[in-house]
Image (tube, rainbow, N blue to C red; front, side):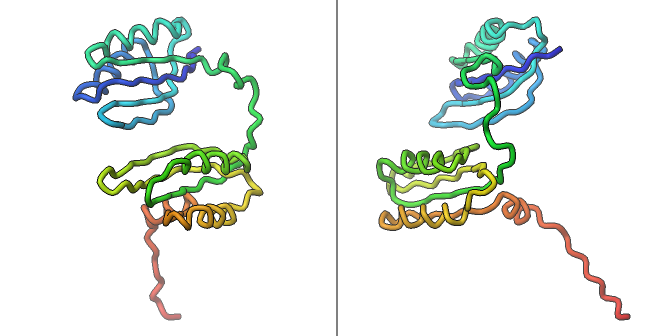
Length: 196
C-alpha cells in the first residue's frame, strides 16, 4: 500500500529543475497528490504531498531527489505526517468557508504579525499566502486564502481589519472564494424569448 509523505524542495530556479524533480519522483515510483509551487527571489520552492511505495524510506526519497537535483543546489525535506508533532488527531473544525483576503498599501513592520494573531483568535487557517514588496515605492500587495470556521463573521473580521489598517492607508478586501470562481468562470445564462 502506498505511503504518503509531505515534502519540500528548495532549489535555484533554473530551466530544468521541474524536469529533474519529476524524473526523481518517477524513478522512486512517486505519485503527487497535492502540490504548491512558487518562485521567490530566484529560488524554486515546492511543497507537495506524494505517495511512494511502502518500501521507500523518507531518507532514501530525500537522498535520491537531492542527488538527481544536485545541479540546482536542491535542499529536500521529507516528513511522515503520521509521526509529525501535533498530527495524532484532527481537532480542527471540519467545516470551513474559503475566503480570499487582500491587503495593499505602504509597508510597515508588524502587519503580518498583527494579521496572523488576529486570524488565530477566531481559529482561521491561512491556507495560501502570496505577497510582493515593490522596492521603489515601498508598497506591498498581499493575497491570502483563508479557511474560516462556521460561526465566525467574516464581514466583521474585514471591518476590523479595515479599521486597524485605515490610518496606514492600507486597503483591505475580502471575498468568498465562490464569488471569485463565479467571476473567473461565468456560467452562460439562457433566456427564453418565446412569448406564451
